[in-house]
Length: 187
Image 1 (cartoon, helix red, strand yellow):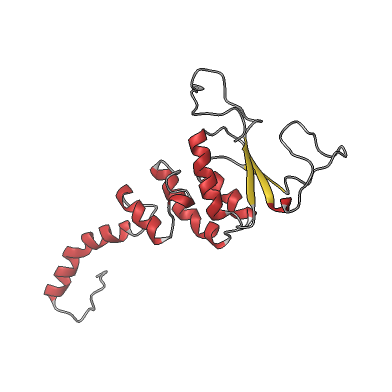
Image 2: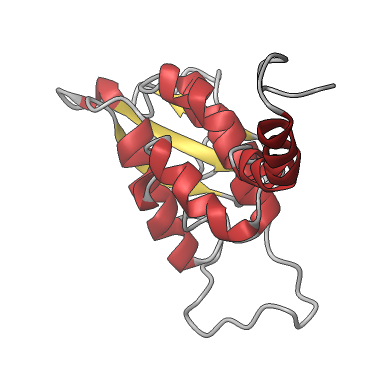
């Protein structure tokens, strides 16, 4: 007999264990974020300290929220590093990103193409500035949420100068209306 009740217990106790087996299986299923009902996902997020600033509101589907819960332990362990930033964007289905650190350190020496995506010249204290190049366009509202997430995940000493998606602009196919919801490449 497969039971958690010791073999020397009475037949009545074994019968009760068998009756409650299905209910305990339902409870144990809710403890697994990959298999639980969608209503339990916020409790799993709370238990892992995933809040609005860590991307909970940005993950809009149940699958995205499950992925965030599954991958957040590693992100939290490496919080404050470029790895944490790079790992968070694919989990939230924002694609791969490129992080350009020391955004103001580029010089006019031919090593960088100055097409508006980079800045040159340096002021005192600019060493901690960075820019993120996205592989897909985001709305202005999403940009504000991404900035809030990066404020929690990125190193405190660093300052985000821009979210740039000029290399992957919107398609002019009528699906996106330029009514102030979307920008034109960088925010």
